[in-house]
Length: 342
Image 1 (cartoon, one colour):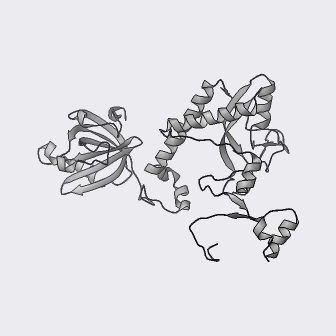
Image 2: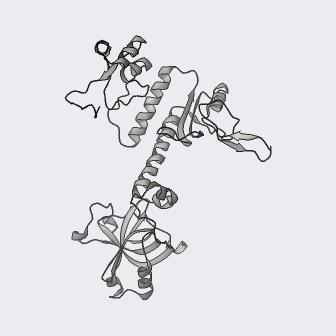
Image 3: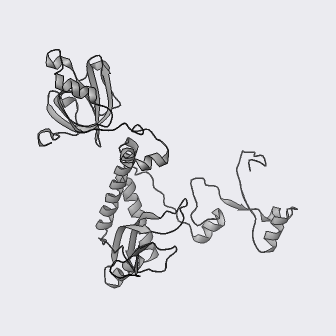
């Protein structure tokens, strides 16, 4: 490996590198045999580079040892490839690849690890159970690599902003005494104290309050949290949250800090559009949307329909109004729905 350690990654080479001697390390994304010429698309997390085993650079015949290696290769073999960068012919330039103007003419190939027959092809989306069973393969896909990269960049942006605002990032314990929270704790038995258990934190609530009374007036943590409850759309057993605590702070301080954080995170992803963080009171949200976490993208507000409902014969409406409730409607202009569609 020391002799074949990469000198450049698979997403870095460009037209200006023509003639350069390089070593690439990565996985076979695609292999194509074309009448004695073998094309290998080599992939790492930075991109894909086309390498080619061309008999022309060996005087017309590929060396026997290199030919034997090429015959063995298949997708997801991990390789080290040594060769020279050359320009692709104009009719073979691939504008969809960042490295699409060049290829590497391979002079030496070392197999670093072999791959068994794959349960699914990388960049396919098989059923979820198969993806989770072979998670290391699933995470090689371009989509998963983008997601992991995005998560890493957002975590960095959060730390960058919070540190700039004078917050300390402080890690709190994850083996704790059970505290009253909104769900059941996960319990971990203690080996040294039989019959005793640690709890995994549902949030760092107690510890961040201890930090406040200790004089650390601005704390944050990208915290792992655990809740032993059934999975739902907005619930899962293990999750990560941006946990924040402030002393001597007003509601305005908390809201403006949160808005600033969100704007910084979006800016870090070149998504700095007109971010409008409108504010709704709890009463306004419940009155207009019937929820304290409304999805404002639809912009359909509830309208009071009580005046018309009390004149109708529908008993459920009358009972609701008699009990002091209300009847509300969504106004959907220009659309007629059948009873079944409603």
